[in-house]
Length: 141
Image (cartoon, rainbow, N blue to C red; front, side, top):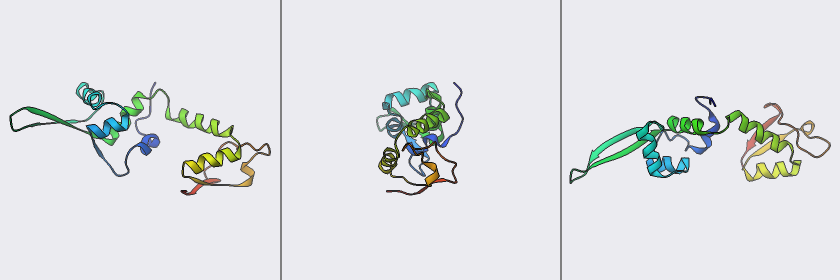
């Protein structure tokens, strides 16, 4: 499966404004162990920087740093779906929910939406997502 090289799909996982992540932070972000992260870097599966230093007794020590783009690339390469597929499936799921359920979902997610009356079906189900100019975030809860 071929994924896009860059996408905002995983931006919510990464801290705003944070560019570099250490091994522990990368492991927490990816839901893996620090050893897995080091192994992936050493084998080239996860692109990063390995910094070598020596302690007082002369023992070699390695520290790793990972750029946010490398972490996003790893997430894209290991995803079992295309990011557009994820959005399409989420939209289809929301389309089958009632208006009340849809509003509750967005409230719990901390998003307020302004939806005009023509966007709702008479059946009480939410309509497919309208064009961006008709559906807009108005703030957070």
